[in-house]
Amino acid sequence: MRYTKLGIGGVQASVLGFGCAAVMGRSGRSQSLHALHAAYDGGITFFDTARSYGYGESESVVGEFLRGRRDRVILSTKFGIVPKRQPSWKRALMPALRTLLEVAPSARKLVRNRVNAQLKGNQLTVKVLRESVEESLRQLRTDYIDILFMHAAPGSALEQFDVLDELENLIIAGKIRMAGISAEPEVILSALEAKIPVLRAIQFPVNLFDLRMMRIVSAAESKGLVFVANHPFGGVDRVNESNVRLRALAELPSIPPELRSKLNGPDDGVLSEVVLNLILMGTGIQIALPSMMNESHLKANLKAISNCRFTAEELNWIRCHFTGETNFLELHPAHEVNVQASYR
Image (tube, rainbow, N blue to C red):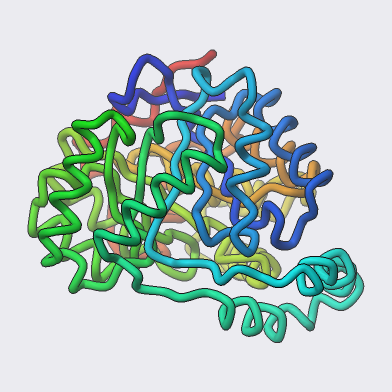
């Protein structure tokens, strides 16, 4: 595992983080705890959850997992999307719903729409912030949060100075160590341009379908900022499409022969190696944040980080193909040093 310093306490964060969106969502309590423990045993020290994840129950399970190891992990959560309290009969239906998703993946869109109807977004107020932090601390069984993100923040959040001031107050009070924003690329670009001092952690999507943030981060004045990339595979429904994109890449006449051979080799983690290292090597992004509830996915991602078959030059060629740049590393040389990292 490779690690990076975030300037939060003395714990180093693993460059491969564990996204907890599926904890108590697609996965029940037993599977969620098993996945969290397996990730920690594999060297992962960065765990990202939210008040809204798992129908509002993700933080509770993450808190149970953290017992006895809180001081050895970096923990981030989010506020701004409020889960509606579910009646007991709806909670009782969750195991059946998860079984449905396993046997009928095509039902995901319907389920996702139903889930979204149970959430209230854009709740970025001082009142919600205070209540959310207290509830997160209680559910997570901790007295501090390493990073608190504004969740799915719209551009208008950058002008909510009362909320930004309250984030600063919570840092002074010791309830959070760092504040940040989780949003789409357009909002993140505005946040970086605004240079709001309290927003030091930046979370955004990066994958083969959208690499805009890779260029934005590389061009940013990033001193003191933490960059976290979520949805590296484009979401559960787009993993197969990601593989299709890589196979199409291997058919290009211009591709270097050795790279073509690697992409056409056995399907033993090629996608994980390309995607995760494409995001992390030479870009300035410190952490990639997939969801890894399946143990085989966890093992593939751990291997991708610790033993990548692709050279920096090959990854640069792939990156340039998808971004349209002639040479990413030459355009952004300041980040080449990030290819090297510390190991546990």
